[in-house]
Length: 173
Image (tube, rainbow, N blue to C red; front, side, top):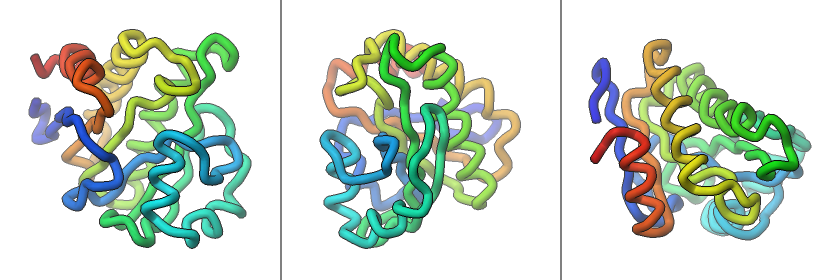
């Protein structure tokens, strides 16, 4: 989808293998350490320098975004966001939206032109995929007019089912 010369897309794949993106978003834990899921994959691909760069930035709160170099990743930067634990961190919808809004604004401030997101909070944090996709779509569409540099936003999703849900929520199908 193109909106004001901005392209939004969804792909099924590995977020650590997106060489055409300036930055990717890590679905981080509060301490910004290696973990399971996306955080584990991002830290493993980036190498040990990532955890070292994260140390002085931690801890972060749900909805907050911080940025580091990408190290061994094919991306210049990694933006780390802590998504909400569904129905524990409240209001879950606002905190999830803040992840996307804060990451996009941070990327724009850094003059990055392309960014890739995972489905934040839908794994171990228990956010229902359909609800998360709607929150994500609303957040992305609401911030598009203020973005000066970011022109490509890509959702990188683990499963075909998640891909279809996010494509529908974003108005791509």
